[in-house]
Image (cartoon, rainbow, N blue to C red; front, side, top):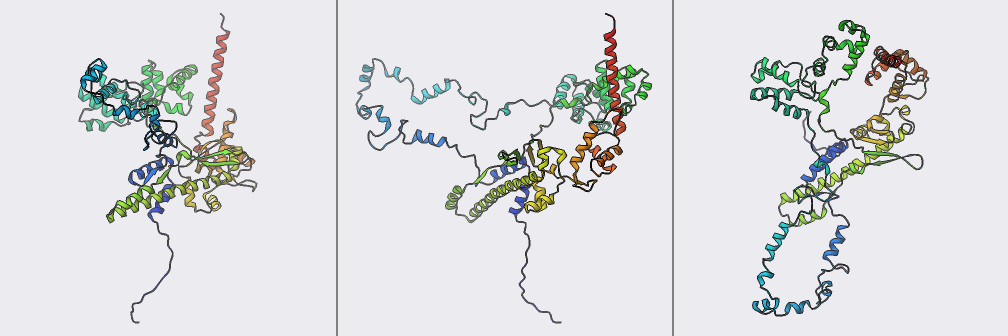
Length: 540
């Protein structure tokens, strides 16, 4: 078979990920804070982009026109016709007075009956400068506050920064030690303290890294553990509680035995603790009460990283017709415009091909960004509206009426791809009459019904389990098997392992642990009531 060369035409379709398409996809999954940061970077990078609120308010233009333009209410206007300006009406004969000859210096001094130096003691510029210097400041900016009187004035800029735990310990370190070696060791240990106030359990490498002896590190650590707040710089919970008890002068042998066996206290093994500590029931109850009044995380009361307030992207409000009104939060939508006027001016002046290409690309990127932001807002509104329509029972009656929902159901309803819906619902929040929820909260798994009816939402089942556990009596604690039976009686077909998984996800302890906790709490209430009764029955 001979080999030949020939030309063939083939027609095919393929999806090309252009930079603009990639940018639009990226904007969909950004939160409102990340979107604001991205738009700010684009405003700095692209000269053809500008904020929509950069223009002066509508009320400022007429004021300037009235001040500098023709106006019947305010003087100072300029007119080419003699005597036609508004200012001429206040000073008749102004041109005649200006054209009059005042005479020589001697004649002027004789007319004024004083010397010209007394009348005009300084030059006009010097007098104005001195007057401005002697005048008292009239605005906060002139006093040195650095603030402006416009809308950008931010009172939060003057709020004092919170004192962190590290700063608080460093201030005490400067007073506690005078030697530079001890201060270096102390600062190294303070840098290792976490937000809760704890040091790592193993400090064996600290001495090696600092080039100091282990005894020197231990001595500095002993001083740090006496710093405020009590319990700071501990290496475990037992040591933290022991430091606080020593501060209160309550660290006796019985309390020491209790602190060293916190695992028994966690399991509510009161009998074992009573035997180890060698005390009776009343004393062990008092000791446990003292332990509960201590702070297991002493460092948490100091300022840490500032938490950002969750700002909703969508608002859902009851409508007048009994439905729900869905609207976007305009405060989270960056408003940018393309400065076409600036581009047209530049295109006339720029002569180099490279500069023209740069501004053409900038115009194209700016236009695409504005379109992408608009498309993002429309897509979020469309997805949120469909979620509200699908979960109407939740907004009307509560969590118990949350329906099973997946991405495919919403995507098919609004004729979009599942990946688009997934990106839209990421890092977006909805403010409703029942609180603020992430959009992904409304997408829950489906649990079959026991009687073959409509399936139940997994979130609604979790809510049902929590209600059953919260309403159980201390003498009748519900096991996982009992919860399964009650859920099946309510028409929910669920396995025991699923109940255990949901219970652990909600951080609800097992039935054995709940029985110990509630019986212990009940015993404390009974003992308190009996002690109060005995005090009331004592003779006066």
